[in-house]
Image (cartoon, rainbow over all chains, first blue to last red; front, side, top):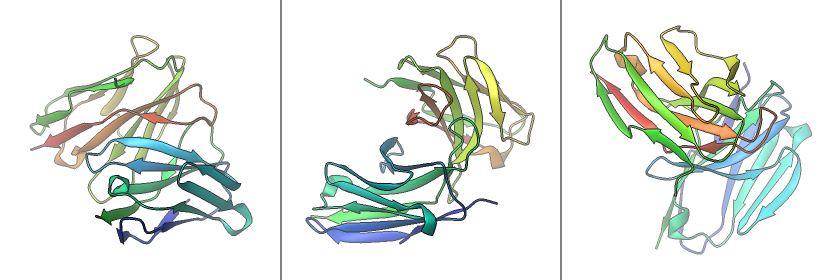
Length: 110
Length: 113
């Protein structure tokens, strides 16, 4: 079946360092979103980026569709960035039936 | 203020019982969804509804029944609860059933003893 692989599984940074998170997927997706899940469990959509490069604030996502990979770059990390970053894809089915990766757990130390 | 309200936040149930998880959204969206997150597993799609009609069902068990009494409501009834049903259940919505940004509620954490 369709799969979403994320790496690394976890990442520890000092405040101010940059983070690079990876998402690899098994077949071409029509929709790709990055989500943030807080330590308390709430989910927030960060970026929708099925192809190319998109920026928002300190976040940059680059998706190379042919190579079936996407990255999320977080610049100048802050302690409040700590949490789990999830990559999710839609493989062309109707509606928002997203397939999620297990996530990257980011911990930013002061 | 949260725009997608899920109730209750925490729920403890005994095996074999029935529970209803409540979801209301105030974003004016036409599509609503249920996802489930079990321990150590990825978020898993369960159902999608558009204009109160079922669009997609990925839940094998008929013990899980969504109920949409109003356009902005999508409750989830779970019958004959099992310990394996223990998970956090997230309600979500989007503007419509095309591939829009998904907005999630805070979740209901269900524990079945």
